[in-house]
Length: 250
Image (cartoon, rainbow, N blue to C red; front, top):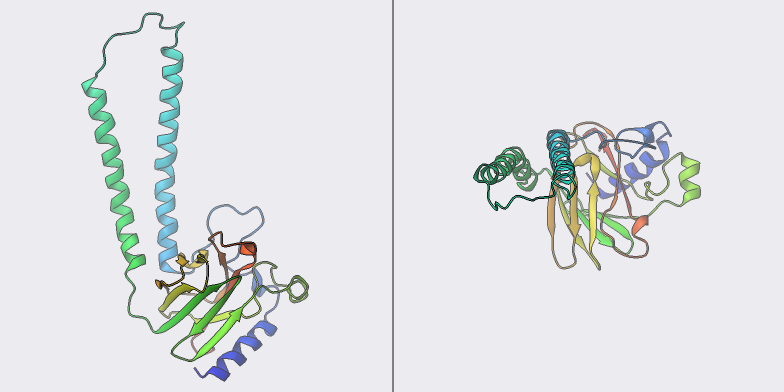
């Protein structure tokens, strides 16, 4: 895609979007619970792993709380004025060693393949370079020779366009759906973090270092992220806005 055509498409896309379009997937919602709907296979697997892990965490917390209450009630000074003198219980020690190990093995069985899938970047069709600055993002397509600076969209403009303030940017980024995008992430100054919750991507942007991530969006929509590393006074004003469009439109 040529540089001039890409910039024209970006500008036209911003002006033509209606407020209903910006209520699409990929944005936080008032009083919302749970994670944003995943727009990538990786994010859906992250959500599934969260749902798998949550009952285990709750069960452990409830068990520990029950044991603490039982010990406080059964073995306090009034209920048990003469304490026992033993110091070991082989059965208890075996149980509290083996059971946590088994729990960790089950968690590892589910998490390690997911971690590998996140870190093992497949062959990409498009490369995106993301640079964190104080306090805005520079987004580049190195192969196409295109670079845009994404700043926070002023509140008045956001309200006028029906777009979410603190999430909308002056220059949204367009990516094609069903396309593997490799993301190179770095910084020009302090540590930032490129985070797109609906994509399952969160990677630190560090000066003098290039971190890598990837995503493959499988449905059109408007997706929002933010800097997720406390980077300075304007940390709260570094949004990321990505429009996933058809390959033909891109």
